[in-house]
Amino acid sequence: MVWGLGEKNPRLPDYKGTTMTIITLHDQLDAAERELSRRRAMYPELVRIGKQSQEKADYEITLMDAICGTLRLRIEEKGK
Image (cartoon, rainbow, N blue to C red):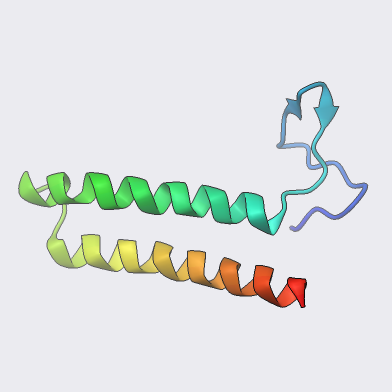
């Protein structure tokens, strides 16, 4: 479910004394980009020690990169 303006998402904590009611596309993109950076930093080691295949690492990085691209596109569309 997507929480809209004026609706409280019960799973979100209060932030700086206020209740968050919406997560912006910019917030989502920031989080996705942080995750993409973590994957790019962490996955080579997981592949090196045999915890993950190179193919799986590449696929998971590509997925997160696509999510970032989709969010950037949506932000751009909203700006028009």
